[in-house]
Image 1 (cartoon, rainbow over the protein chains, first blue to last red):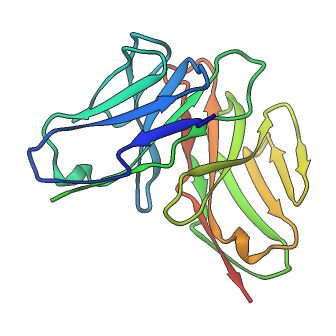
Image 2: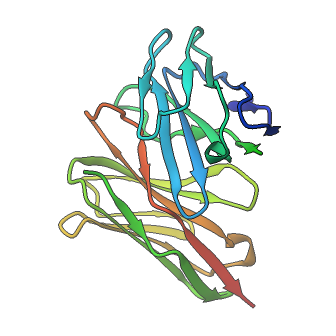
Length: 115
Length: 113
């Protein structure tokens, strides 16, 4: 049982390049989230998904796109990377329903540097 | 609006108790969480408390919730060097569009020998 797996763990991009971050969970969770973590800023929600085929914007969605074609995968895309997108990206998932409230399961993060 | 506030640093001596404080603004919070992040690692769920509870204890961890003042605290008894990390307070607001978590900026817990 791997939980939430993020790939890659590290990446360096040049300004203007594109890339996709992959998040995979094997817990059959309905909800999935992408956060970014910047020094002194805590974690901020980029996009989220409440189920396969659905996505929605979070607090800081500009410059990112997402897709949830399969329930277990949530992809975060950067179409044209900018230095302001240098950050650590965390994916999280959780089950729906009021019975389970043990919190959200986080991946170990992707450290992205845009030069 | 949603806002979660924490002090940035806390320094304690090994063996003493650590108390990390958090305030939140949204009264519709349903669950409040404490996460621990060690250097270079992801977020580890430490504990959570439902908004209709006042206290929750789990081994060395005690969570106190004052709903009237919107104040949450995490007490770590007998603080050890392995407790050195960043501690994040987070609230979950039910019924909001995002249904995600709103995090504080994190408190760096520094352990002095």
